[in-house]
Image 1: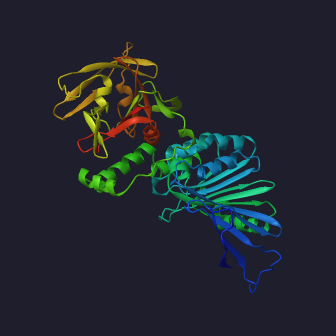
Image 2 (image 1 turned 120 degrees about the horizontal axis):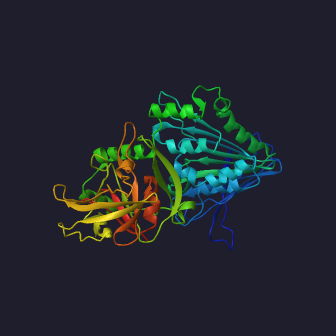
Image 3 (image 1 turned 60 degrees about the vertical axis):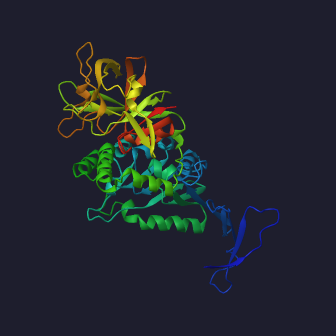
Length: 470
């Protein structure tokens, strides 16, 4: 227990207000082992400087990690985790975390695998409540054989910690706060965490870490029936029961809820945007380069099974991306294009103009070739659908070998079509040929950050998003 007394600002250091705390003499604490504690707070209160405890002759350092308010700051939980995994000081990594997404893992997967390949030990104890941990994230952990455990209670008691603990022969570290293992949680959301660093023989630090492990002891030792080792069979049960969903399905569900319960008219949106300013989103480490993960879809012969292969691709200046939604047409191959769009009440260009058509000439049509998966699918028709009052492109091209693009787009029992709830990235090769890549919707923030301009379709600007890469 501490009491505080004010201390005058040190001369020559106008930046920091310094406070001095010391143990009360009357408390049952040996003053030989309890030294004075100093800490400093910046005027903005966004970042707290280093705390130092001197206990039994050893130090324990605390750092406040505040992220999301300053997009230029690298003080994020994600960067701390990356630096910890890269450090030779640690040989064990244990995480207790509520939500894990594919984008979150993708931003640290290189460091995770390097850490693992050094012979270091990794154990992740992951929650799956609220559909917030995705199928794709768990599949990636299984693919790379990263030891992981699922914590789930069917009676809706939510597992919700965010703790990342690192241990080595000489140093230990624990990061405790609000950041989930998602891209937004690690790098972009307004989050707060405390990083505790101490030497391995620090008594107080070890007691702190032991308290964490003691709390999760039944989970760590698999004595708690709510904790199961992640395996293909466990994932199958979670998917079958819809506790875990594919990311595209979860986004579609959230979009439906937003449309039904959260959508407001343009006038109300303008009042809201006039009242509240927008925070600038920080790019995560893998977002500094114009690199996204594209989905190459491969259809097995004589079946409707679609295999998704992830590949990195660099965004090309001048490419256009378009959010698909559920698509229309029996083969779910008709993509809506916009005559114009809006963003924050400002009228913007329409996506149809990218393909060389005049948005106001509703009698014009055009056939284009789609280069996809190394094949040239010819005669994809762009037209104005008068009954729907919008422009459309029918992705039904056929190769010279009579392979149909609709073989990728058509849904089958239990499977969405290959274009549904995705982002289609078109790169203009010439006036009639366009390269097509398929991206997941979680690439949207990266696409927006790398766009020279973007908008949303629909008369009120509440439709699907699209943009031009800078």
